[in-house]
Image 1 (cartoon, helix red, strand yellow):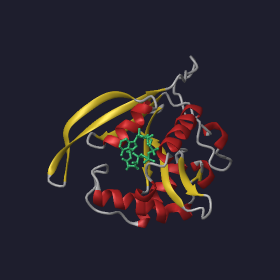
Image 2 (cartoon, protein in one colour):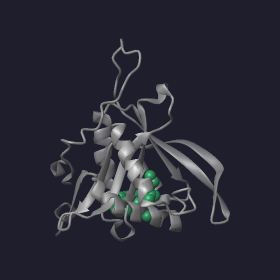
Image 3 (cartoon, protein in one colour):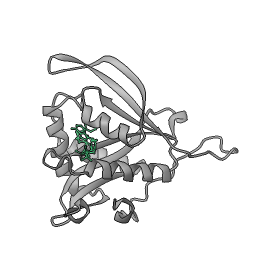
Image 4 (cartoon, protein in one colour):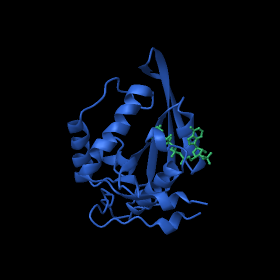
Length: 201
Ligand SMILES: CC(C)(COP(=O)(O)OP(=O)(O)OC[C@H]1O[C@@H](n2cnc3c(N)ncnc32)[C@H](O)[C@@H]1OP(=O)(O)O)[C@@H](O)C(=O)NCCC(=O)NCCS
């Protein structure tokens, strides 16, 4: 039987992946409630996001088809809120192209970002999900995220109000006692290598 590891791999995102990332993002803006924008965004918008995320030391990883190296899913960590005390909290996002869903890519990217997030010394990883997005809630719940809050009618799209749920994953990261202001370890953009063997089963 073909294992999905034979067809896909994971690597750090590159600027050349932005057109694929843009396609995935814009499709979800137009056809779903998982993003709260109404209008598609430009290539420049995603390029700026890529450059800024990288400069701040957060990771963006992509799942690619091994044969073509084309990105067909991506996942990232980003800032939760700007104030200093939130520094060890991060927000996770995962997007898999419509044609490649339910092939295990969401799980693979989630497990890898949990490993990376822990390695980077984050204490709390937040997933902010539109409550009707049952697939996403199921995925995060299956891998250790716990319900942390439910906001009612905070969004309005396609002529209806939308609820948002927060799910959180708490790591066992500790902060050294003498650290007044802790920091996370920046993602090693230049040297990152995905280790498939970790996820063979
Ligand atoms: C949510 C999402 C990331 C899941 O990725 P995926 O590659 O399709 O998911 P996987 O194949 O890895 O599924 C893993 C498990 O998650 C759960 N799951 C995933 N999609 C599901 C769905 N549509 N309905 C119910 N359960 C689902 C299942 O438990 C599944 O295991 P199974 O296939 O053995 O039943 C993907 O559907 C997606 O990109 N959705 C749009 C964007 C989004 O909502 N992102 C999350 C917000 S951060």
